[in-house]
Length: 107
Image (cartoon, rainbow, N blue to C red):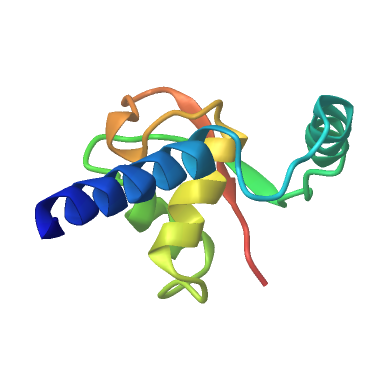
């Protein structure tokens, strides 16, 4: 009897996790979800930037430190995210010598 109850409880838990992941616990209409996504696209924060050409031996971090005359005032993760956003999702470790990129400027 305990095995049957354990299996039944496990099935209920698995089903509830599946339902939560596919449908969610708080239903939201598709129109509301689309409107929320569109509203977020239009109001992306403007990131101030400076265009710099990459020279041999440069890294995104070294260029950022040169722009700010010292160490960064923001976490590296934020700088990487901002760099990707400004440059069409280009990874910082994929920059090319001679190319120009937008580098975020922080106050």
